[in-house]
Amino acid sequence: MLSRAPRAIRLAARARTAAVASIPVPDASSDARRGRFVAAAAVSTAAAAAFAAANVAAAEEAPAGTDVTTPEFAKRPNVLFVLGGPGAGKGTQCERLVKECGFVHLSAGDLLRAERKSGSAHGDLIAKYILDGRIVPVEITVSLLAKAMAESGRTRFLIDGFPRNENNFEGWKAVMGDSVDVEGVLFYDVDDETRLDRLLERGKTSGRTDDNADTIQKRFRVFKEETMPVVSHYDKLGRVFRIDGAPEVDQVFKATLRAVAPVVKKEAVAAAQAMLDAADSLDWEAYAALCEPDMTAVEDETHGATVCGLEFHKFYFDEGKRAAEAAKAAGKPLPARRSAMLSPTVSLQTPNVAVVSYTRAVQSLAGTANFAETRVFVAHDGVWRCAHLHRSRAGEMPAASVAPAGSSDALHTPAPISKDALDKIYEAALRPAAE
Image (tube, rainbow, N blue to C red):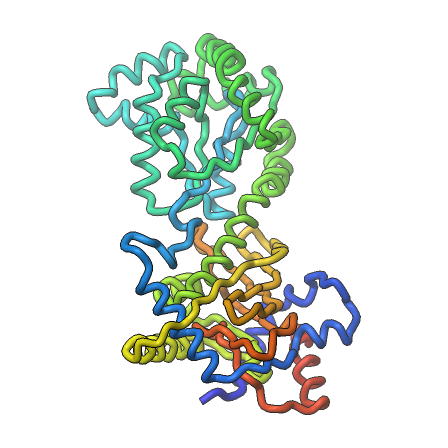
């Protein structure tokens, strides 16, 4: 039975979603915001169950091999190449991105050096190339990168020091193809003199055989002659994030965070769409995997209450599947539905907290319903999970149509609520978290 959340849970929910109130809306007046927060939903439970049944039926009738639930972003890792001359500070910035943003850092140079020490068949060959300041054959480098990506089990990567030339670039495309999304190049721009000083200083303690003046100069020449054309290629595509790597480390990192923000935002939007896809097809496993276990939600069907946890949402999946089974047994054809995300906006509160707001258009042969939704996502090791959901009605629906179901994304007709009650709900939602 649904009941108002205890005070401790409500306070936690307010603290969690305090940033949501700051999201700009088309009309920021008090009345308009109240209208977005609480809206009537003229939909019956029976109609919602019918739509849930339709979704399951459609999924079951899909051709073999058709993927109707798995989000695309989960299959295609996001990759940022990290380039810059030797001593540009790429490794230092990558370490910060790993710690604060959950990226997996793969250094082509580190992988090659580790392979050299492993005693493998490629070890001696790699050692000779590195000592001469030359580029290792692409077949070796790409195979090591692909292996490391597969073993990580993750989907967000920084590939440091690769591709170093056109051959690397072509080799990457040949091996990886469309299996990953290359978002672009983080390019750290530092003058030769500064980089030389850094490398010579590092050579005093690094133990690296290539941190000496002669080898460093060779590496500088190779970078200018072979790697800069790769940077220029991506630059022409508008996919180079150029960062001044000369200032103090923290200042460079601030610029780096600004550069990676579009990638992080894209992932958050993809996670939100994946939740809609899972709800449309009643895939509870996929939906739950995208949620924090103690996710909070405020929706029309909660009558202004904040619900905490996933049991409330799971109810609609279970009921929808039962309705689908009954409909299938009765031989009743039912239409499916699809949710589209319109005009999404993302606000990054931190590198690991994203507030995604959008209009959700739910389409069916019966009509289209629009809802204003906001989801607060938290990233753990680069994996986004929803910590809070807020939904309200954003548009009218034809009277003859029915509404979708399949999680708390199912919409019920709330009992009549007085104006005083609406005011109290609205005020409570906007109350500062410190209360």
